[in-house]
Amino acid sequence: MVAAVKDTAKDIKQGQEGSEDPLPDWVEPLLQVDPTQIQGALDTLISHYDEDQRAFTVVERSSGWRLCARGEYAEWCRALYPGRKPQRLSQPALETLAIIAYRQPITRAGVEAVRGVSVDAMVQQLLDRGLIKIEGRADLPGRPLLYGTTDSFLDHFGVRTLDELPNAAELRRVKLPTADESAEAGSPGTESPQQLTLDSGSEASTGPQLES
Image (cartoon, rainbow, N blue to C red; front, side, top):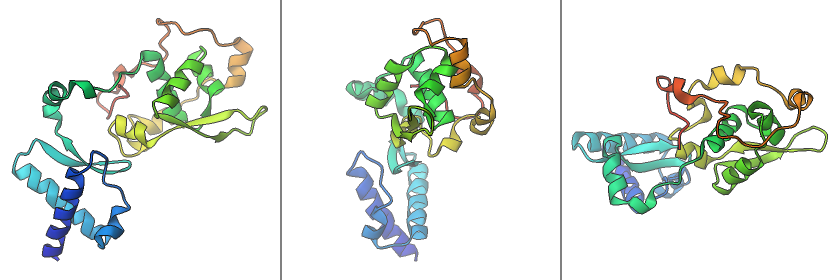
């Protein structure tokens, strides 16, 4: 069994080093081993990298396992690969994304009810970047589109599931303005740099931050 785990670890290591993408679940039948053996092989690799004090380790992402540089080497990575720095999200886009992440599936009008401004441009930007997707249509007049986050969103913020987002359970229980309430108050205005409705500064001690 130990020898089999070591052989599996070698196969996984070769697969990870040969690709920038996470090692997906469909690799299991290719290796012809059971999930327990794959987990044991991954644990072996992680222990090996820790003992050797390697600059990288194996981390689990929503779409699979990936070989990643350790956090303490982030500055070196940015210096070595300046052209690969991801484009940062604007504050309005980040706020729109946070509302969708915590309240998905949600309509555009639902997001606007919380933000108080039109989010057409922000939603399109997030769609273009692959951070959100269309989940279907709401059972409401006009059948508006519903939006939710993608696996790329989870990878971008370093979490495996939506439950790992900071204060996920608490924030989903908070009652927010609805589209009907927003309509009674008036139509959404235009985006204003001073109109920041979500404060991410209080999440530091609870988990990953919704920052780009």
